[in-house]
Image (cartoon, rainbow, N blue to C red; front, side):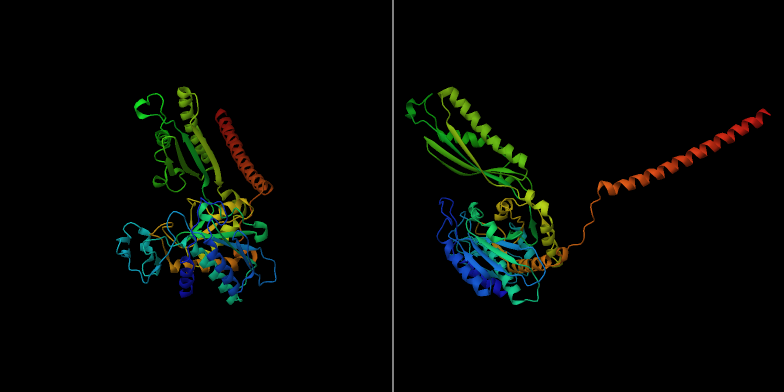
Length: 466
């Protein structure tokens, strides 16, 4: 496992934080530092056709080592880290043989990673954890995924007795700001399907995610001397607060789970004259997703109607933009790609945890671009903050899952058991006919018995008359 630790640390100590304020791709120049390193590393381990384009999208190929035809598959991860928390001067700590107690991340600042609060820690007792020093995020999202893909490819190259088809590898910038797949060349990638290695705890296997949109509402105010403001002043900040208060109070991230959607106000910046509110809209159900967007418009229309009546003009402008959609619609028609990953985990004694993603991945967008792309665990926890950590054993298992998927894909029917053929109407029909024949025979027997009984009664009556 030391090679995994060394490789991972070499990645996370390079700052690759993305920034939504910049429209370039990648959004930050520092992402190139890791991108260029990855290109050289992929070449060094023996990958072929290693390329990086002008926007820092990396692709590489591991050729097939079997003679029969096998579908081309891919593995994808992103190398940027979240803008939510600092990724500068990441100083990883290695906790060997974790004992289940509190982990002091930063003694000076009294920052503690405690199982009392982060209960998932307890499932990793006696394992090796990599944590932050309490001052930055770690970057396991998604440098753990990159580590696993590179390590798995290296393993397959060094162990040619493991049979596999052609495998494509793709690394993307700017996933954390929702742009990771925007310039991904699906045709050039050339895979029939792929997997993002971007999930959390060991066992996660996901093919459902949120439908997502972003909304920006600009509220216009009117500045008037406070002493003479009655009936004239419009305080845009108060109007913005009124808008927020009309959103469903319990439909927020901190009060929802599973398939429950939400509204999340993440930006509020204002003055008396103008206030901008930005929020994200999330829901797994497409109908509820559309309903949420309409609700935003409805609240804005209500506010505008009020002020148009009072001041003769609308004071709120709303912009709503869809970001990505639930990949389920694109993955279900090719459900065997999920079944292969599930079988790979089961063969490695990993319990699959199939649940909806409460977020999105590059795979969400890639699935709608013609590359169905479920998500597999990368092992990390508590992404986007100072409490982020990753168990090394989980990363090792993720490597094994990648290798096993490669093996299964090269087998007849992908190593999956033959599924019972769905009976057509034609096949069902004879059974119904057979059943009705039996019923007819049963009825005939009943009628015969009834006739015999009637005859017997008739004879008895005749005897009595005599």
